[in-house]
Amino acid sequence: MVYLWKVWAMANRGVPDAATQLDIFRRMALIKANDERSRKVIRSGRLVMPYYSPRGQEVIPSAVSANLTDDDYICTIYRGTHDMLAKGVPLKDLWAELAGRVTGTCKGKGGPMHITHPKSGVMVTTGIVGSSMLIANGLAWGSQLRGDGRVTVAYFGDGASNIGAFHEALNLASVWRLPVVFVCQNNEWGEHTAYEKATSAKQIADRAHGYSIPGVRVDGNDVFEMYAAAQDAIGRARAGEGPTLIEAMTYRFHGHVFGDADAYMNKDRKAAAIAADPVPRFRSYLISEGIATEERLAAMEADIEAALDEAVDYALASEFPGVEELSRDVFAQEIA
Ligand SMILES: Cc1ncc(C[n+]2csc(CCOP(=O)(O)OP(=O)(O)O)c2C)c(N)n1
Image (tube, rainbow, N blue to C red; front, side, top):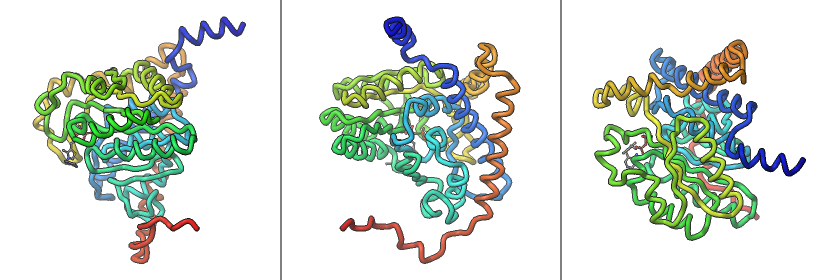
C-alpha cells in the first residue's frame, strides 16, 4: 500500500491536488478583483496613490504561495500587491496602508510602496529596483543560523536582473547555500523599456549557471508549470540544498504605473496577452474538469467583492497617523 502511494506520489510530483487548485484560483481571483477595485477607487478620486498594476501576473505568486507556509517569508516590490495578497496579507490592513491610515500594516507610515506585514510573512516591499534579493538573503541567512526551516522568496522584475545587486545576491546565496528562491517575474517590460532592448541574456534563467545554482524558465501564466517549479525550488531550499532562480514568463496588461498611456506597448502583443488572460482561463479549466461548479466560483468571487467593499470603507474611514508617530518605530528596541 505504502509502495503504491509512493509510486503515485512520484508520478504526480508537482501536480497540485483539486483542493490546492481551488486555493490557487481563490488567490488569483482575489488579486484580479483587488486590481480592478484599486483602479476604480483611484479613478473615482476617493484615494490618490501611486499604483503599479500586477494584472496579468496573478498565477506566479498564487502558485508559489500554495507551496509556502504562513511562517515563510517574501520580499517584494512596488508592483507586488499580487505577491502580498497571495501570501495572505489581510485586505483591511493592506487597504488602510495604501490609504496611509493608522490602521494599516505600517500604521500608515509606509504607504503603497512599502507594505510590510511580518505576521503574514510579507517582510518588505521596496521601490529600489534590485534590492528585494539582498534583503531576502539577509532573512534567509537568519533562518539558516536559527535553523527555523523557513524559506524566503524574493520577487522582482526582469529589469532588476540587470542591476548589480541581483548578481551579488545570487553569488552569496550560492556560496552560503541560503534557503532562498529568486522569482523573476519577466513581464517583458522594465518601466517603458522592452526586455530585449536592455537585457543581454536570451533567458534570465541562464544567468543562474554563472553562480552554480539551478535556473529555470517557466510559463508563469501556467498554474501547473509554475506550481511544479515553485515546489521543486522551495523543496530544495527547505532541504538545505540552496537557492534556485525561477524566471516566470508573463505579461503586464497595463502601463508601468496608473496613468501611463502605454502607447509604447505593441498593441497586438498586448491584445494577445489579454486574450490569454490566465484568470478566466484557469476558471474555465476548473469548471470543465469538474473541480468546481460555476455557482461555487461565482460565490467565491462575490465573497471577494464583499470583502473588498468592507476593506475600502474601513481604510477610508480610518484616521491618519498623528504627528507623535513620526519618530516611533524608526529604531528597534534594544533587547536587554
Ligand atoms: C535602483 C533603481 N533604479 C531605477 C529605478 C526606477 N525604476 C522604477 S521601476 C523600474 C523598472 C523596473 O522593471 P522590472 O524590474 O522589470 O520590474 P516591473 O516594474 O516590470 O515589475 C525602474 C527602472 C528605481 N526605482 N530603482
